[in-house]
Length: 196
Image (tube, rainbow, N blue to C red; front, side):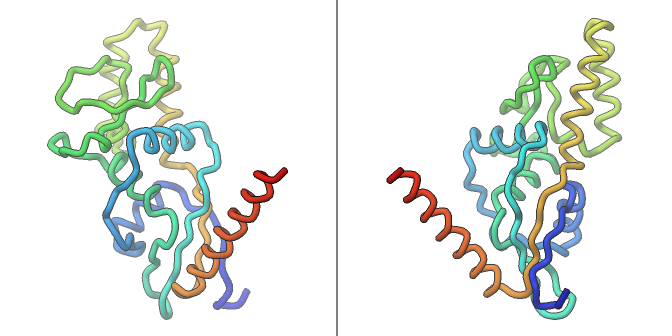
């Protein structure tokens, strides 16, 4: 493969967030535009292993960092929800939990009491927080229900291992061309379906 050709691969949510934290992956803007419904739908798709779309990244000259061209809202959601909003974070969208009894995500008041089976997502990536939370949850629910809730908590925590498809292209111009072609194809398809 030539170095000027796009490369497609997958990266786990964990690896993407690690690269963001290390500065190897750059978000050009910190503006988080998604509403609560977008956030919940995206997280539920990850939990259910549904496709969530490819991230389009571009890389500058020899070995430079990678910049997100398309997929920024998805990554900002992961950063804000999984890295963990601090309880003092005033953006309510960042506080998401999963009701382990019904498998549904919901937005959580960080200052309110929660049921023992409501798993705050910010705990799932930090074993030092997640394991004690699970232990405490098991002590507070019926022992026969605890095993099922632990299985569901594990399923939710596997969001960190979700394989996100990535396309890495050499330079911003290539990323722009790919995205423009994709959007043009979507418009043509939409036009055909309206006339069918």
